[in-house]
Length: 314
Image (cartoon, rainbow, N blue to C red; front, top):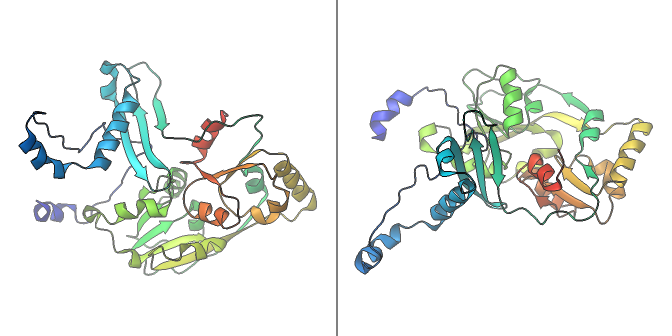
C-alpha cells in the first residue's frame, strides 16, 4: 500500500502532535489475538507474535483508565511510551463528560515523596536576570532543523521549506508565534527519545547527517555522538554581573532544599553554595548528562510540571 499512498503524501505539511498533550485511545494500533487456554498447539504458534513491551504499554493504559467509570473512558485518551531512563510513562488526557473539567495526568513510577520541609528552586530568578546574546548563523543548506530551544531561532532567517522540530511544547508554541511551521517535538524527553520517530519512513525526513541543530554556545559539545550532521551555536547565556543580584541569587540557592535544573548554566555561579543535602532533579537529555558530569547525580523527571506535582506545589 505504501507505493500507492506515498505520491499523495509528497510535499505534505506534517504535524506530529505531542503524545503528552494528545494521547490516542488506549490500545490504539495494538493487535490482540485470543485462543482457547487449553489449545496448546495454537498458543505455541501464537507465542512468538507476543510483544511484551506492547503488552506492558496496554496494561499501563488500561490501569490509567481504571479509575474512571466505564461510560466515561471512551472520551479519554491514554498513551504509554517507554523511556530509556524514566521507564514507562502513560499520558492521560480528555474530558470525562460534557460538563466536566478537562483531565490531564501523567502516570509513572515517580520517586518516593519528599520528606520534611521543601524550599524549591527552579532557576526562574537566575533566568530573569541572565543575559542573552544572539547572532545569525548560515542555515543553507538546512533541509531539516532541530531547534533545541526557541531562543536559538530568534535571530535566524530560516530557509523556506526547512522541516522544523523542537524540544518541547513551550518552544513549539514560541516558534509558531513567530510564524514557523513546526512538525513535532521531543515532548521534553530529550533528543535521543525522538530519534526513532524522526526515522519513520512515512514522514520522509532526511537522514540525521543532513540535519542541523541550533543550540546555545555551551551546549554544542553535548551534541557529539548525536548523529546530527551539523550543530550550530546561535546564542549565548551569561550570568548577571551585578554584585547585588549575584548575592541575592546565591542566597536563594543556599536556602533551597530541592532544585530543578532546566540548564546546567547556573552551576558556574551557584555550585559552591549548593547545600550538601539538597535534592537535585532535571528532565532527561543533555542537561541531565551535564549535571551528572559535575557529580550532582540528579533524579530525572518527565519535565518541570511533574517535579512540581511531586513536590506538591503549584
